[in-house]
Image 1 (tube, rainbow, N blue to C red):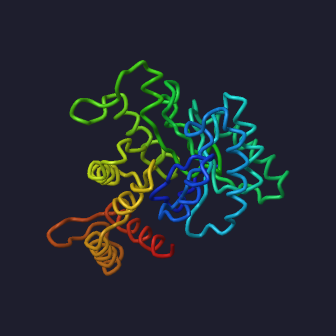
Image 2: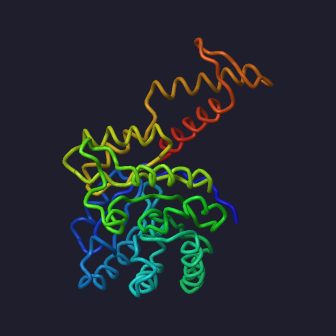
Length: 300
């Protein structure tokens, strides 16, 4: 099995699975995807209630061309994970966000579970995609290069800095300057590299201060500059900021069109000049990527 680069999800908004009010507000959001949460946002005493609410919500929204619906289940190491899957697959979620993975074998395991549940529910085989939060355990940091070919269901890789900090016994994951400390910066870089190696989407982690949209925009722009193509939101007010950061602006689009045009006007050349800059195949590849993203966003 090989990875296949999917339509990028610029913004993915966490929504507690047991909050009727927040589930309804999610419909109004311009997030490319909602992540209906059965894990950290739901108290254990409310998990069973949340499963029923998430299933009802999924069934009530079969049309998802504008906004995909994902579900974050509990970790595979817990009994709750199978109960989550057994409950929500009947609603045909677009994907499962899998927390606290140790490596690609967890994706294989989840894929087998989904194979069986899709048959049970009469769903198309491979309908439900998977994205792991791939940096939340110490072991996971050593496995980020191994996701290529693990499952055709793999949509992307995302990362988190909170659970791994707790697992490492750290009191904070950022330096006083606001930058990530070494191990978390490494986790972010390896997640990006691992996604590229698997040819799937790299999705950046949350910005925890939902009142600081200026900081969010700055971090999101830096993440996009490094290669990330989307970011997770924890508050509806963050969605438009994230969409802006991960949507090419007019100048970038215009430049990308010119790059493509100059190569098309000079077939057979591997290097061309444009406005005093020497361009080669990586520049053409990036320009085409930008234009493909613009087309996809326009189609939405």
